[in-house]
Image 1 (cartoon, rainbow, N blue to C red):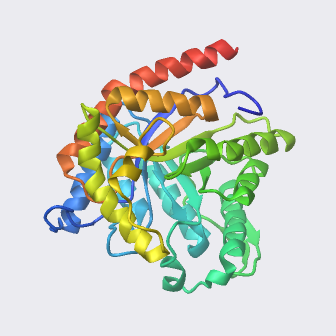
Image 2 (cartoon, rainbow, N blue to C red; image 1 turned 180 degrees about the vertical axis):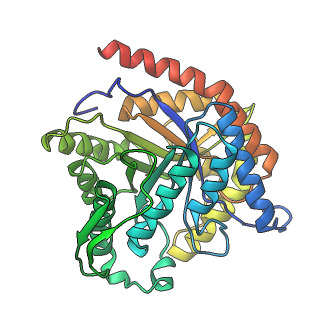
Length: 360
């Protein structure tokens, strides 16, 4: 691992994120209602909070197979039912949103949660939001850069004067409400774009790297680039780096794989048809859940080994797991969260704390 070692100033964080999928059961073809899906989602967040997990993230999508097009609204409902867990978007598709409304929504969430809100800004993996809100995909990169600039201005200043190409100018505009936290945390989520990594480092923003395919080693250069650029920019803040991955945990390895694969294959094969990829096979899936694969699917012992292996690669400070791809049976997801909180988290936190201590 190149660059500076992981900072000891922040304990290692473990959490969940969800896209609130509304896909059919791969075995029966039946769908639960959107109401039931939201109910289940709130219960997963409550359990994560009760078990002492650190973060719950919720993605933004504008497709019929998801129910979270307005994550801040759902996260506010979660805030009212939890006590300590941090609440993040995962991600906010900033390119097609209005930074003023994003800031106001998450400042409001921060007030409801008494200082637990975060924004994870990214470009998103789907494009439906661009025509929906009247944006041109040809402006994809320019939109994100400009809107991130404005979002950070809104975070720093109560009154803002700003002008850009893709939004009406602001002239000494008051932006309210202000959040509970002095500075609302803004993370940058990337999938594999070096320019986005450099931007996050130069702006001293925490970075989340999504690893949902391939070998984790292939993403190490992004972590190294982030650290090197962060240091060269002269920032003195503690580096925050998250790895976001797909995962599932059951008492036995084969049970975890058998539970996870049907809905995972349904979702990934559907996306593959849209993007020209071949359907995923069980053999490919089994490879992806090996130690050097992307998916953290297995027994608690296997998931612990994999988290610690990746920590040796990245020296990251946070791990978020998407503990269902597609709509899995609710009891299976709840049990996976229970195992993450009671079996995985204590071992991982203790081992990483000892590693960090050894660096000092």
